[in-house]
Image 1 (cartoon, rainbow, N blue to C red):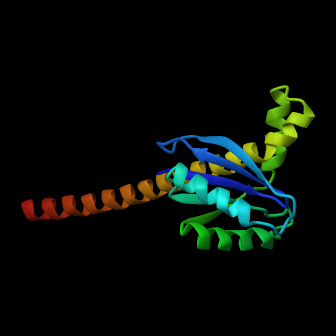
Image 2 (image 1 turned 180 degrees about the vertical axis):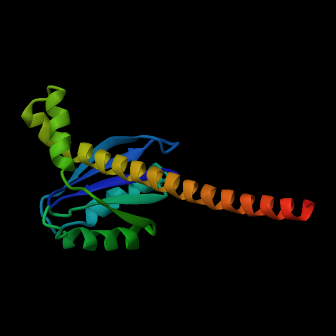
Image 3 (image 1 turned 45 degrees about the horizontal axis):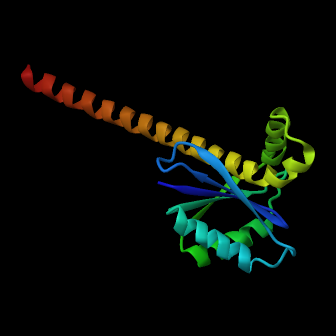
Length: 166
């Protein structure tokens, strides 16, 4: 399943995509706009990417502040994306992803001016990777819970078999 990751900001949207097998997230591009509320071209570009990469779900960064309050603009953008693409849009906590992206780019030795042009797409990649890792952990938990239930059922079956054999 191919996913698209988005880091929504007032004038830019960082975009990342998973590989065809859904194992890794790669930064793709940064969509820019001149005014905060002018989203028609941004949505059209995202719609193009959805078709081009055969995206099945979108993961949108959810700006949760350190005090627990959340960004309402991202929720409005989510509703627009769902209407426009007809895909499920999943909100993913994006706390500190831009800071982490900047640190990664600094470690790579990228000059400050160049970092500004790619930081949002790197942050989108981190948001998408976090979602994928959390999803794996959740499925492992679900698998282990179902394994435990299966073991309980097997033990009950063994008890019944042992009692009837006596």
